[in-house]
Image (cartoon, rainbow, N blue to C red; front, side, top):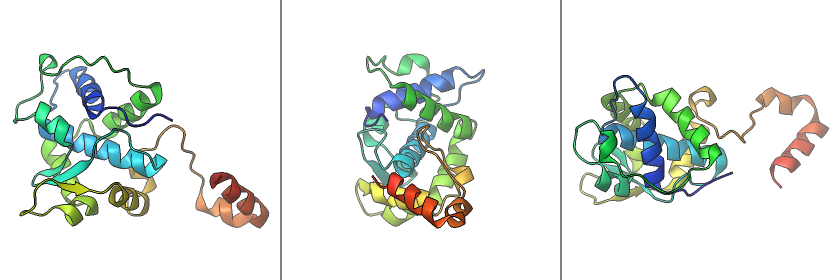
Amino acid sequence: MSRDISPMAAAAFLVSLDQLQLEPDMTPMKLQKLMYIAQANYLASTNRRLFSATVEAFEHGPVVYSVWREYSGQEIIRPEAHRNLDEDIPEDVEAFLSKVWQKFGSKSASWLRRYTHTQEPWLRNYNPDGFRCVIPDQDMVSYYQQCVPANERILHQAVVTVPATLLDEDAEADAALRAFLHR
């Protein structure tokens, strides 16, 4: 399972997916919200970071600072605006980011802003008088694992889900499964 790619590689990949649309609409704000959604879902499904940067609580929602410095403003990000990175993105990360794009890529920047503003990780950590307030990884993990319904989450391809009732049917199988999952 891959992890800790550079945030710029993840951002460039998401921008490249947007460029495949008939009418690309990736703004810096939309990119920031997709980066947060990707990091939060990856953390919640793998307990590992997708990219090697913290997410911060800014006025307009979660932000990955290094990506914010590279892509700023309100205009749609054009293909020539992002640099060509030499970093190869592992296949499982491409698949994961593609799932993020499939679920949220058609949403507008303003929709994604409203969506992230309702989530506890941003609400808990945003301070209008603060400066670069970090959203702790554990806040994203807890919120996405406990508050976001499974059908709304994006899981890494290595994650297997089982119905909760499966664990209640056979105590011996339950114990064996729990032992397997916790090794």
